[in-house]
Every structure is written in structure tokens, then in C-alpha cells.
Amino acid sequence: MEDEYATLLDVFLDDSEHRMTRLRQMLKGRSDGSGVFDLQELSLMAHSFKGSSGNMGALHLADLCRELEERSRREEVRGLEDLLASIDIEYVTVRRLFDAERQLHSVHP
Image (cartoon, rainbow, N blue to C red; front, side, top):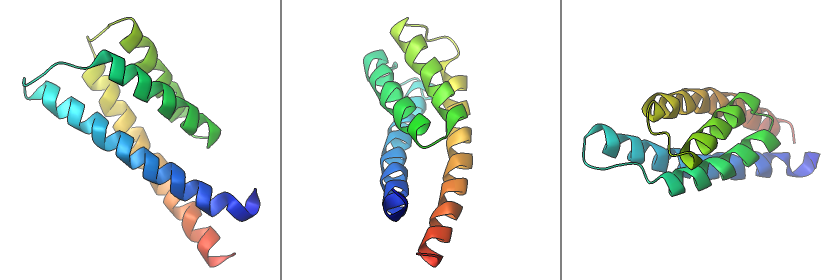
């Protein structure tokens, strides 16, 4: 797996960027008053993001995604904005760490 680690990081980061972009769009739409959360989409996205984050060792991010998945399934919309903001903040931290990790693996093949 060591030989493919850089590729794995790239795939995770690319996939995560797409997820975060969509989560940010959903949050913006909600805060603008122009829409409501698609709870099914949130649940499915959170489930998938939880798994990939956990597999990569981003356990706090995975835990936040688990909470989002559960709350979406229970249709608990109260406080989802705060939870999505927490996921965004944690993702930024994970992204920085994995970008640094990626740099190490491109310098030391």
C-alpha cells in the first residue's frame, strides 16, 4: 500500500473537495432562506464521507459525519448548520495535514 499511498491521498482529497463543496452549497442555500436541507442527500453523503474519513484515519471528521448521518436520518434539522460548520472546520484541518503528507510522499518516493 505504501507505493499507492500518494494516490490514495489524492483520491480522498479530490473526493472530499467535491463533498465539501456540495455541503457548503447546501448550507449556503439554507442560510439564505432559499431552501431546505435535502435530508436524504445529507444522510447518504455523510455516510460515505464517514467511511472514507475513517479509512484515512481522520477519526474526528468521521465522527462528525456519523453525527450528521444520524441526525439527517432522524430528520433533526435543528443545529445542522452548526454541525456542517464543524465538519467544514475539521475538514480544513484534515486537508492541511493530508496536503503536507502528500508533499512528503512526492519528495520521498
